[in-house]
Image 1 (cartoon, one colour):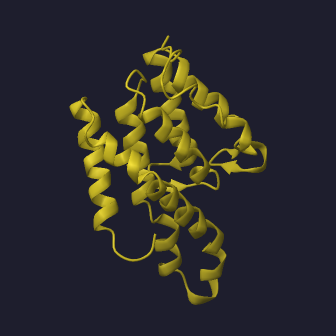
Image 2: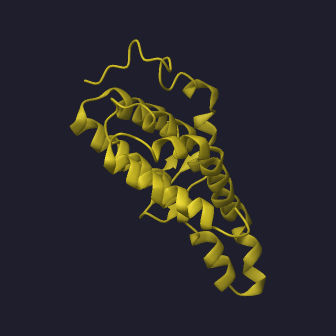
Length: 171
């Protein structure tokens, strides 16, 4: 089991209770179970952490491209874990954040919809916008991770940073 006691950053995920998880939805319904998945990702051994990131990905970025209402709320916690050198699944965490950042499923669906149906996508498009804004708010962390001693972490972070830098227009 990974232990972060004595870590200079303090105790990971201490802000989990500040989010009203039960009032938010993920791809399966209520997001009330997400704190347990994030905790499992933070504290469990490598195998259980991999299971946790896979389940978490399915709930906040279903099929790798469909975001949920809760997605933006999860990003700060994912980034917090990605910063911890001893954490499991750092590459997978950053890959999930990169997938979230690149998702335009609801905006693309709205653009393809008949004009009378486009307004029905507004809330879901706001989930995408909020999630990209949360990733953008983590730019400093991503920049730091782009210089991480782990070459795999650094590579994914650099790619994510390039996508942030190259993206024109709307977030």
